Structure formats: C-alpha cells, structure tokens
Amino acid sequence: MTGPVQNMSTSTTQLPSASVGAATAGAKREEIETAIIARQRGRARRDRFVYLTIRIASLLIVLGAWQYYGDHSIGVVFEPITAVVSALWHLITSGQLGPALGYSLWTFALGYLGGLVAGVIVGMCVGVYRIVESAVGLYVYALYATPMVAIAPLLSIWLGFGVLTQEVLIGLFVFFPCLVAVSYGVRNIDTELLEVARSLRMSKRDLWRHVLLPGAAPYVAAGATQGVAMGLVGMFIAEILTQLSGLGDLLETAAQTYHTDQALAVLIVIMFLGVVLRALLTLIQRRVAPWAK
Amino acid sequence: MHLMAAVTERAGGRIECSQLYKWFPGGIVLEDINISFESGEFVCIVGPSGCGKTTLLRLLAGLAQPDHGRIAIGGQEVTGPDARIAVVFQHFGLFPWKSVYRNVALPLQLRRSDRDQIEARVHEAITAVGLAGHERKYPAQLSGGMKQRVGLARAIAAAPNVLLMDEPFAAVDAQTREVLQDDLLRLAERLRQTIIFITHSIDEAITLGDRIVVMGRAPGRVVSDLPVPMTKPRTISEVRRHPAYAELRDQIWEQLRGASSM
Image (tube, rainbow over all chains, first blue to last red; front, top):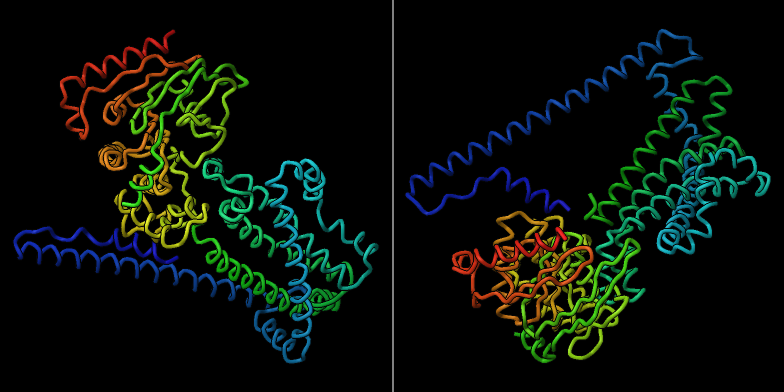
C-alpha cells in the first residue's frame, strides 16, 4: 500500500498547475513550483541525515560505554563487547549455537502456530457467539489473568519433561493474548456495517466472508505480533524450567559456569530473533490488512 | 440504461404505513404513524433529534419490526430486509477492506448475478454518482463526500424500488453537502425511484423533497405533511430564490418548535 502515501505526498508538494493565462506567467509559476519542491526535498533529506546521525552516534556511545565498562569490570560480572562478539563467534564455529537455535526455533514455531490458530478460532467464537462467551468466558479471563509461568510446573507433571510440554507452554503464552485481541476485535466491528449486512440480507456464510473475517484481520495480525513477544517469553521459561534445552540451555549453562560473555552473546541472539520476527509480522500485517493503519 | 430499466420493470408501488407503534424500554418511540409514499415520490422527513425518524426508517427498511401496525410496499407486507429496498447509511456503511468497486458490487455479488451484469451495473452506478476513475481506491482514501457517493452508488446498483436515506449528508461539510444535494436532485430525476430522505435540516428537506413530513417528539408522531411548491427539475439556488421558500421554511420551523415544546 504505497499508493495512497505517494498520492498524498505528491498532492501536498505540488501546487495546482497553472490555469490558462499568459505563457510567461505559467512558466514563472512552474519555476516557483520546482523551487518549492526542490526546497522541500532538500529539507526532507537534511532531516533524514540528522536523525540517522543521531541514531549512529547513540549506537556508538552505547557500544563504547559497554566496551569501557566491560574493560574495567571483573570478567565474571560483565564483559566488553569485543569479548561478547568473539564468544558469539565461538558459539557459532564450535557448533553449539546452530543446533540450539534450530531446536528453539522449531519448538517455538510449533507452539506459536498452535497457540495462534487456537487463539484465533476460539477468539472468533467468543467474540461472535454470545452463547460461547457466556459458556467459556469466565475461564478464559481467569486464565488470562493467571501468570502462565505458574502453569509450567503443573504442565511438567501432566505432560512430562519433554518437548511436548515446551510446545504447549509456548502455545499457551501465545493463545491468550491472541484470543483476547481477536474476540475484542470481532466485538468491535462497526455496528453500522452489521446493519448494512442485515439490510443486504447476507447469509451466515457471506457474513463471515465479507464482514467478520476481514473485520477481524487487523486484530488477528495484532494478536499474532503480540504473540511473538509472549511466545519468546514462553520459550525461555519452557527451556529453563521444564528441561534445559535449546537457547535456554545455552544461556543457563553459560550463566551457571560464569561464562558471562557467552550468556550475553545468547542474549544478543534472542534480541535479534525478537526484532526479526516482529518485523516479519509487521510486513505480513501490511499485506493481509492493508486498510488498517 | 440498465438501472432505469431494472427499476421500471418492477414498478415500485405505494408504501403504506398504518397505525405504526414502536416501544423501547424507555418509553414509546413512535405513536400511531399513518403515512403513505407514492411510487416515485421524493419525501423528506424532518424532525428534532429523538423524534423517532431513524426508528421509522429502520422499520421501513425491515431492520426492526413495529410493535403494532403494518408496513406494505405495493400491498405486500415488509417483514424484514427486502430486495426492493436499499438503505444509504448516515456514516456511509462502507467496508474499509473493499475497494470502491467491490463495495458497490457487493449487493449484486450477494445475489449471485453474473459477472458481466455486475460489471455493467457497477460501472453505471459509479458513473452516475460521479466517481468514475476511483473504482480501485479504498474508502480510507476518499473524502466524506466521496464516501457517501459510494454509499449511494451501492444503493442504486441494486436497482431497488425504494431508497431509504438516513441523514446521509449530515457527516459531510456544508459546501460538500450542497454539491451532493444538487447531484442527488439530478440523479433522482433520472432514476425516478421512491426516495425517503431523513434529515434534521429544514433547508435540505425543502431543497430535495416533493413533500415534507414533519415529525414531533415524545412520543414520535407525524405533525404535518406539506407539499413543496417548487417544481422539478430544480437546483438549490432556484429553490433558495423561490418566493415561497422563506414562508415554507418559517412554517416548518414553527411546527417543529410547537411540537417540541409540547
């Protein structure tokens, strides 16, 4: 959806073209217009440059401070950025990071997808059908208010200490925010649109197709984005609390053995993971629901 | 002219409301409404807020049921939303996820009309409201006036016998409203559908209507039913310059005041 944005920017920068008049006046006007556009472009470019400079400066200061503090503190407590980067390199080359990342991502993907799909379906039903809402709403909201970490030990008792428990836990972390976002979204579909649907005598099927599903799409996308953050939290809790594995294992082991540089390296990997996944989802969101701002 | 042909084929028929009553938990909203609308007539309903004019429109649209009384179009009772009726909504009622084209095509698509027919009708309706060239845009890219043009196009694309309009121009600015009024006058001349137009603006009612029904509040009822003396076709400026304009305006104003002070 770059269309509207482009339209808007051209309409604000271009003055209405010269009306019929003396050719010289037209030419003069065009000249002024070009000058204005050039000036605005110049200003925009300067702004971009300023903000980019600030960004880079901030990054340099933070990294510099990190390096300085790391150099002047005891190794166990903190490590300079150079040590962290070399620890990261060590984790990669020694073949520790690859399998751990693979395991974590795969567990996360399964748990996340399961939680998302279930959350969207249940959320839709809770939002649309009052019967479903009154039947299960109470439990849903009670569980939503419960910190999911508290469920981890119980899940281990019920499902064992394997990967299944981890997937279910991640799923639960994703499930509730999705459910709440989607049911809220469906319930907040413009009532006038529902009137339109009624006046057009839409069948149940058409109502879902033309109104409810597209109306909920932006909320599904929002739930999915929030689910990524929650799911990553769930992933770490699962990997540390149920059975040490994946990135959680890497982090926990590094910390237990006072390899602070490695622990920080894992942390950077996780940060990177979160940022990339969120960016990916924002991209999908724009594709799926381009009308939602 | 597919649209015109489609409309005259199922030549509308008179709309009759007899002894309509509607209660809401707060009290009575409509009391003993008896009005009829001739086929092809443009009737404006004016009244203060809370006089039940929107409720009356919802009853006519089949979106709500009267607690007592009967509404019939061409002798056939209205029991629910009806293919003979199209509604133009106050806040446009456009689906933000559908382009202009898809919004207008929706009623035809729901009827499972064939593709070519849909395309021809939609094209004609969009051209009729002056939006040709904007088919691929989304509602968010349109101004308020343009949005309501889409709402109007969707209503007429379905070729209904009756157009119900609920304060359709209340949400746009004053200048745009006048342009829309003029365009609606011209469009109504061409289509000759029965149009029931709800407004709280006396000027708008005089400009557009062949007849004006004045409603009063608490309980909602018909206060008077006045013919508009200006002949059609006409434009806003012709109406405003007409010698009978000021007098009619005062008359309606007095009635509205009298009705709400009771």
